[in-house]
Amino acid sequence: MKIVVTKNYDEMSLFSAKQIMEVIKDKPDASLGLATGGTPIGMYQQLIHLHENGLDFSKVKTFNLDEYVGISQQHPESYHKFMYDQLFNHINISPDNVHIPRGDCSDMHEQCELYEKEIQLAGGIDIQVLGIGSNGHIGFNEPGSNPEERTRVVQLAESTIKANARFFGSEELVPRLAISMGIQTILKQCKKIILLASGEEKADAVRAMIEGEVTPELPASFLKLHPDVTIVVDQQAAKKLIVSQAS
Ligand code: PGA
Image 1 (cartoon, rainbow, N blue to C red):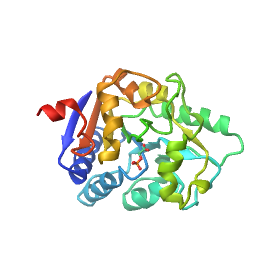
Image 2 (image 1 turned 180 degrees about the vertical axis):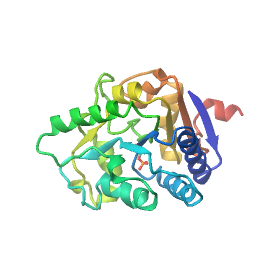
Image 3 (image 1 turned 30 degrees about the vertical axis):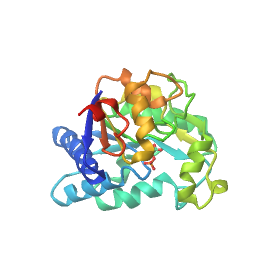
Image 4 (image 1 turned 60 degrees about the horizontal axis):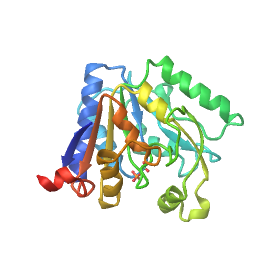
């Protein structure tokens, strides 16, 4: 694991956008694995800025990590809407190249299988962006997740429901189920991974991921088993790392 500590959120966002830019420059039809949540919004703004300055997304493919189950793509809090609002409406990506798992299908099992196939057909994901929950989740792979699982329907942890209530207005309105790439999908299909974390509320999870043991209780710790992971954290999220205290 490579660890990059940035001064603040803006520097974290710029650093990670540049990592994505490098991948696209190297491979114009790269597959990007994308994440939602508050953390990557600044990175998406930087990517839009890079696009305005010539970065071409016309051949780029994208695969999102997850989506809520039981809400439509048009729901104000769907990850589908989030991605179009935050990024896709502002760059020259073809909607045919955008993949976001659907949480509104009658046959969710079939949807999970299809999503895995689409990732395989694309030849895997060249760079995957991840956030981390304060409970250590990646995607919606909550504590206790089996690392052998691929894309599937999962139950949200109470802590995730509480954390995401800010988007829905109340805990009751947060969907209880989601479709999420599995830990195996992330470890096996993604060639390069960057995990972003910002703010003090992520400091315990970041420390446990980097300094603790590999355990299903902290799904992000499985990233230690991947050969090309860069953790990009701002100083607040890095403040409990022993290595940061020593420097
Ligand atoms: P956040 O979520 O970016 O909104 O903090 C990250 C996550 O839960 O993975």
